[in-house]
Image 1 (cartoon, rainbow, N blue to C red):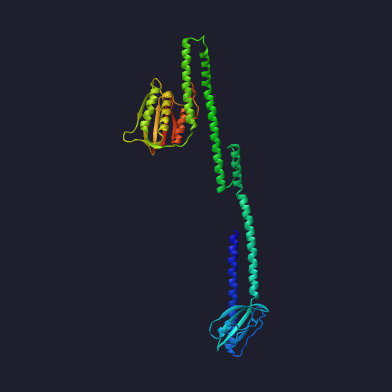
Image 2 (image 1 turned 45 degrees about the vertical axis):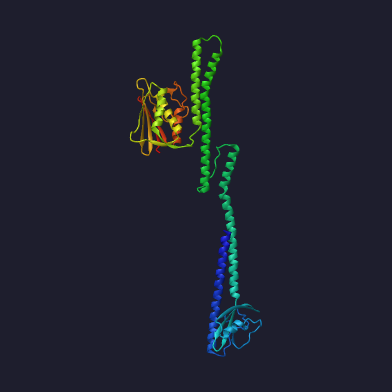
Length: 434
């Protein structure tokens, strides 16, 4: 801002200086023309005014010269100079120059006259010099005030404007020092800094939620592992007893231990899947989903031989999605295993799977014939470790649908549970088509 003010002030001073000097020369030429006419009218007219140019304004001092006069070296402001001699001799036209005399600076003009003569006219520059001095003072004063004001405003603007940056930096330093993402940046501004602070606060909030979810996962996993571990310790303690246990009872305890170990292995596998989070797919490829779901369906049929799994897919197209095959297979296995476990009954064992294109997505529908899910529980079936009261007596950890929801989210799709009371449950998954 100071540089701009200096540039504008300098340009203004030069323009005003040029204008004042031009006006002075115009006035001087007008006076010289008046005297020139008088000389033409009266051949013996010398001049009017002061020979020493002591007047600050008109009448101007003047002098008539001839080409035959020698060049003078005196200090008089109206002395005969080589330039004036050239005008009198007709070798040049009108000439302007500034001379200095006892009365100060004088602006001089030499104009030609008839019969080899010329007229020297001078006007003191006192008034013009005073005007230029006032302009210079005014420009310096206003320019200095402008620079001072720009400095003050700039300092205040930088101080107030950078306050959110300092606040943001302080919060970042505290978060780095305390590792506590619950800090917030207290900034109320509707500009770039305000949006930056808001975005950073939102990032900290998401980080806090992620940490809380991680802590909740650890707490839930600890709770879920405590029961099978306690059972295992009890059964092992019983097996260590050398007497008092019948062989049949020992076989039952060994079988129970084996079941508990299998359940723990499944629980640990599910926890590992959940711990991966909704991380992006490292190697995505266009996958035909029908063969993948057929493989998952075959595995589910082996686990639940009482259930009757059927798969319907379009004959004239190959629905494809961008995914990682292992993750897509895991999704199908979780959903079909869940349907086989809870959704098939002795009188209605059917589990129907259909795959079809839907707009720009691929839709998977898994419909079972189980007891269904009450409407108030539909929103919670995808929570970690959640098990409805009706299914708590069955084996499982309550992580399957949470894993399915996480996989679908990582693939950019949606999953929804729809209840059919007394008839069964429908799981609807939509993934973006490749």
